[in-house]
Length: 168
Image (tube, rainbow, N blue to C red; front, side, top):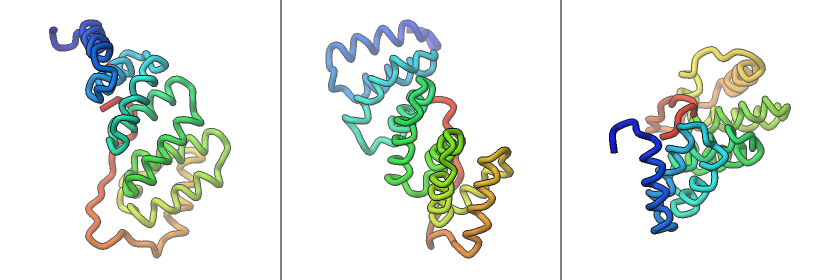
């Protein structure tokens, strides 16, 4: 199959999933390719199965959260990103996405709580995001200012990551 031939990739991964529905790799790859071609609604099922098969795989969970958002299932996406933020406490990407969903859905107190908790774990990662605009930016600044004395855990080497726009 030629590089970039997504149609062939999708068909190949569909055959693999049909042959072995419990294959993490087949479900993850099919879901990820579907997400890349804007078939988020269809991608969700395959990514849910991948996460079920490997609950500790961060990339599968992030891709599931992205697919849920693109499929306009914000509540489930929020649950997914909050779970990732709890499972990987220094994960700026999941924390910021969860907070943005909360702000967007008018649950600003929830966003404040998520960001305040994150500042204590990975302050440098949140600061590295740089200035943020809109209501999310205001809430992030509040969290950083109100937790001014909070410091990163000793030995932490966490860094900021990009926001989840493309699947991994």
